[in-house]
Amino acid sequence: MKKNLSLLLLAGAMFISSYNKLNESEQNKYIPLKENIKIFLPEKDSTKEKKNTYINKALNGIEKINEKYLNENTNSISFFNNEKKLKDKIIDLLGKKEHALRLDNITYSEHYYQIDELSLKQIKIIYLMIKSLEDSSFSNKVGRIIKEDVEDMYSEHGGIINFKGEANLNLICLESELKKQKKVENNEEYVMPSRAFLLRKIAYFHLHACEYDEILFAGPSLGDIYDLESNSIFFGALHDFVITSVKKGKFNVDYTGIDTTNNQYVKVIDLGNYAYDTAKIEK
Image (cartoon, rainbow, N blue to C red; front, side, top):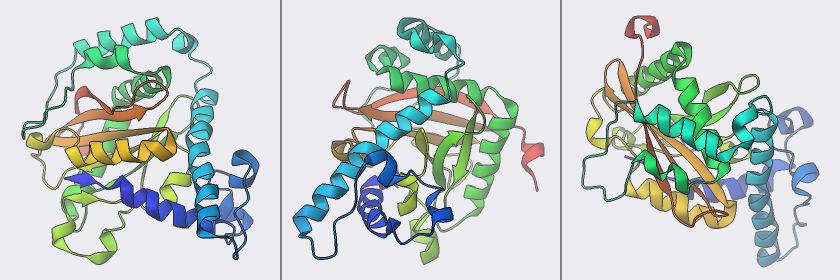
């Protein structure tokens, strides 16, 4: 089970090239390239090398805009500027959780002691997710997404995470590029649509939920980690949450991310197991 962020990058570069073709109302849904990244895509007769340079500049600016978006929506949380206090809060919360570690010969660590090795940006994102997961309406929404994924035979599900009001996270599902192929063999993969990388967000997410019992795959695959590390060369930082269905009514969440200003390697932090009300997610 893996999400292919390398395909996201390639398709995303193509999306930049078509961005100017969108009308103004459509462009408003996305990060405004011209105003915020300060670039203009080269003319049609520009060389391939020049076009690639402009695209790289755009990619490098996207995470900075998303970081600004994160900070603007968390100004009310006073202790977010106290890195030690924030880390201590997260470690305390995770120490009380039940955890599920990936079991299929994965060699990386998922222990929360790694919180001390993360950047302030990473721990802000993690804290917001933990607190959101403690809200029953949020965890029930995850449960509904899991149910939809289990019933979908053509692809895993995923999308982006943005804000719904200040400091309140919102999961936005985006249909996998694989769904349109309608092939059962694609059911263990999720490929982010190209437009996702330009949407305002604090992180991506994807599910491991071909069926309700996926505890063997509770965490990112090595392919997930490779994709994040390879694409961090362009974006600087990438954040992804892997949501795994442990059984009906329960799921596990792992933060998988990299911030190259702090560390050159992806870190995986198991955020614990969470429950949802199966009766409330039935249609």
